[in-house]
Structure formats: C-alpha cells, structure tokens
Length: 220
Image (cartoon, rainbow, N blue to C red; front, side, top):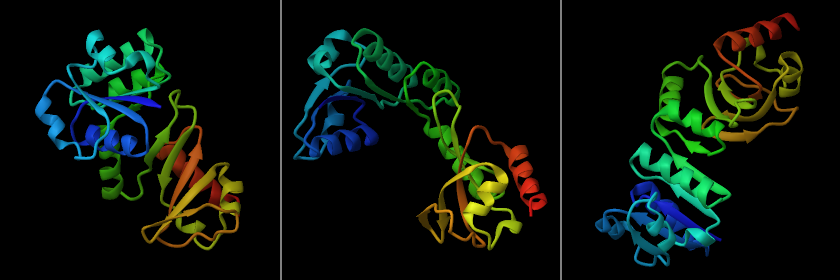
C-alpha cells in the first residue's frame, strides 16, 4: 500500500513512521524541510517539500498510485482542500483529515471524508471527567445514525446483568470500563458500582439517558 501523509508534525511523524515500519510505501509532505528531522533515522519513506493541495507536489509524492491520503497538518483549510483534491481529483479511496473546527468536521464527515476532530473529542472527554453523569460521545458514523456513548449506570442497575439492562433500555452495550480496564460486554456480566458503559444506539443525549434510567426503574 502506498500512503501519503501531509504534515510532518507530531501526529504526521507518528503515523508515517508506523505505516513505514509495517512495510507500507510512505511519502510525507511538508512545506518546512526542517520538520523532516523529527522522522526516525530508520524511516524508509520519501520526504517531499511542498503543500498537499499543489498538484506537482502530490504527483511527486506518488498520488497517482496512492491507496490512501492522510492530512494532518496544523491548518484546517490546508487539510480540507488537500483531502478534497485527493478524493475528488485523484479518486483516492481512503482519505482522512484532521480538523480542529468541529463544525467543519461534521460537514466533511457528511461528504464522505472521515475526520478526526481533536478539539471536539478533547472537550467531550474533559467535560465527561468533570461531570461523570454526563454522557460522553465516543464515536459516530458519518450520518450520525449510529453512535457509541459512554454513560454512568443508574444506581438501580448495580448488581444486574448487562443482558437484563439491555432488554430494559433497548440499547446494546459494547464494553464496560472497570477500574481502568475495558471489558468486552457479555450478557452475563454483572454491573458494579463505578463502572462506565459504552452504549451503542441511534441517538442519545442527557434527556434520553435519563429516560433510559427511568425506563429501567419502571421495568423491574
């Protein structure tokens, strides 16, 4: 597989290095050649000076035979434009872009370009730690039709099995975080105090979480 990584910052270096170590053909693009010094000494890929939306730069990086394009520069605009050029002009099947602005991330996810919105994710994680009762979004698909959310169990769930809870609330449990460890969900697993559940569902907010908890109490 030939992969092009745009942006030789910390994320770009890490991604490019790991892909190259796996035996993939890798080219990494950055306008600042000094950034290439951060690559490990045994990096086997190519380094290309330029910007990821310049056609000559992309061709030098091997875009015409690339299988994947990953845009992780420090600029949202550069990442968005480069990702669209890779997807729309060169028909690259795997295109991923890091976007800091969560509003833009939602738009491009709906256009079929998977995005990593680090600001939104970090904010959700911090608020989740500040307010344990607040659901934390872990993952959703591009159309927001399937979501995975971390929630704290209602006290009435303690001692019950996941199978019992799932039948009461109409949602599926993906895994349980317990004492810093993740446990793959099984219908026989009993919920303990302090657990956090990763729930797969169609849509979930605080109102529907409260409704699920209420439903579980009335379904005893």
